[in-house]
Image (cartoon, rainbow, N blue to C red; front, side):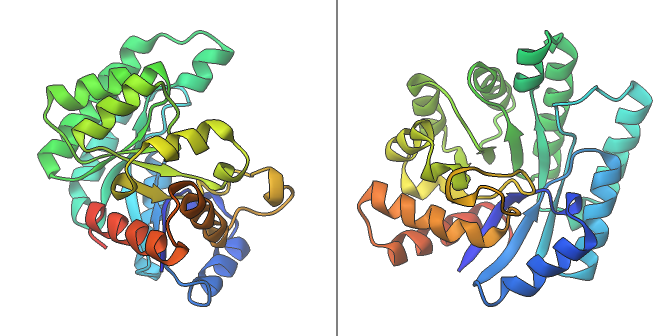
Length: 254
């Protein structure tokens, strides 16, 4: 059985959403962790989850965009608290690594907002889903350690070995996408990271290359990811699939 641990389900068209939902049972996909990018995205994912209980929403604000003003932040945090019982995690939240590469970004306000989300996750006793890669991950880890939040999921993570070892020691989880099939950096990460702390995701509708070039990103692609993890870890596909499923069920209240 498979859980897509990170998908932007609200960003698919209605027709694409229905196609994925129809395909879940025959592909043994039991749940989708539907992360949000802003308040409207949170509202959309909540509505989708109420239509189909296999969609498990996470509420947050994606960092690769302009920050909301204080009034909008307050509105978002109030809404999340009001709808806490409907969410499985705070997410997706983090730091704007890719935006900063394109155009220098002032990190102070983003760090302040991320810390507010870390505090909120601790307050509500929910896991947190992080968009924090390379050197940004170290800043995120500092905040997690400061507030003693250990239920952290670094999605589509990339980083140096020292950061990876720190994450492993702290008990943080990572998830990998179908780019594992053709990205050596991700293959090396999977080799280093304990299988017991790995999940699988699509980050759909983000598109992929290699054998998936030109295809709509679909959770069934995760089957190929699992097979690659099994190859890297030198374990059977069935054993790896079972472990990844149990990991995700342990991390999220499925």
